[in-house]
Image 1 (tube, rainbow, N blue to C red):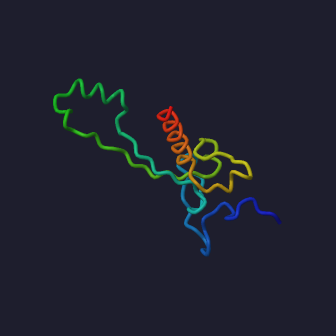
Image 2 (tube, rainbow, N blue to C red):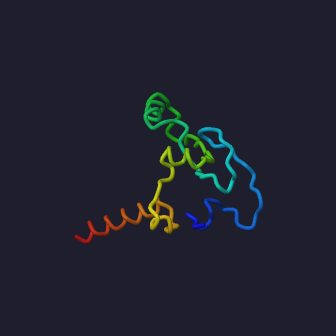
Image 3 (tube, helix red, strand yellow):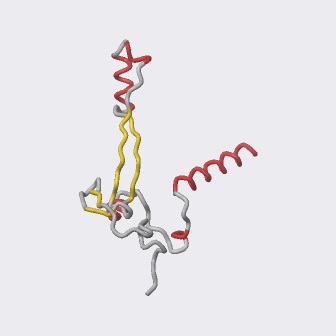
Length: 117
């Protein structure tokens, strides 16, 4: 039978069973190697509130607000629904680079072309 992906949608090579995780969105149990994992670093306070705090506070000038560090794990259906990952064509599935890198390279090319002109 033909296979859609060479890893079968998992990262489990030569291991039997992987520890299940809970999806951060829906709570579904997903094997750790199959889950879509993202590490998110976010400010605890939103940008609009930061301005309000800095205007109201005297001591805020030298103080750095702490950040929120989250390790999120999604099941495949929630990752697709939440646009964390995209459905790709058969040819594009072979590309193993992260999507973010392609965007950065495209932006760098645009900048280089704009600087060259």
